[in-house]
Length: 364
Image 1 (cartoon, rainbow, N blue to C red):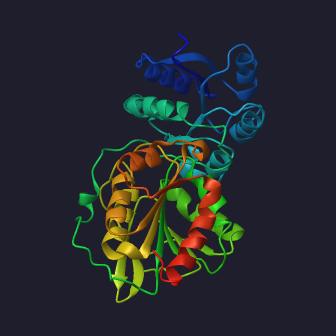
Image 2 (cartoon, helix red, strand yellow):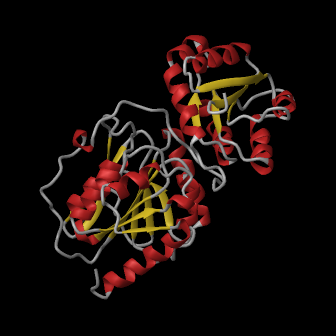
Image 3 (spheres, rainbow, N blue to C red):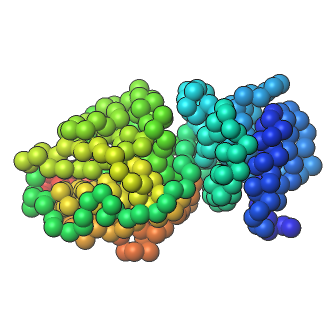
């Protein structure tokens, strides 16, 4: 049927093709239109019917998955879900594949593959449904999304209310939260900031094996220092701290200075790190001394946290729909009345610079 999500599976393992197809068959809104053992064979099939979503392995004969991804994204951008065992063993290869344009990742084990895929059928379906909603027309290199986790609120990490912020401090904080499409969006923003930019704290939904690598890549491109956050790091001008994958990051105050706490804990809004956890901590400890920005991403993580920042006196921005890969997170924030401004990705770097200038002149 025309309204079904058409999927093609490209994997040299017959077991993977069979089990993934069975998992997707459980959803009446998804139709597997084909499977191929390598990208060359897949391209032949795709000439007659193009899929809405591709599920692709990385290690395959005749053409590797990374080359295939680059070819697809250059010729006819299509949402791609990576299903690979390289996410842990060969993180660089998987990161390159995601950088080539894939929208999410499922890590499959070397052993117990069949049972793992059967147990993960709901995750596979969710990954395909999320990928089908991705706006790949604006998707450029580097996006990572994690598999859906149980949903808790920021209460799991820190309580709301009890504002502990100073009325006004010399140091201010920029807090950014993003998910699907966010790695490309963050690159577009951070590479345009001057070395004197205000200190930045960032949550990008990303698996643990990728955040350090992602930070290093941004650091090589930016005038500001970009690094994966460590517990106790200071938030200072010219530095951006990215929450480590698999850990929550919270802003804390030490005197009039800001530091970050990196801590383990349960997933919040199905993510760890969670944008809501970071934003709540910024509302609590920085209040009106902060600017909050929510950008492209699936779901609603960060929407309530941005509203808490807004209510605490912070200025807040939501990325607009036209420039988002996925408008979910900004849309939910806008619905809550959390955003003072809605703007294109291209305007956000200037907004950050202008916020700093306005604050230093005493404006709010």
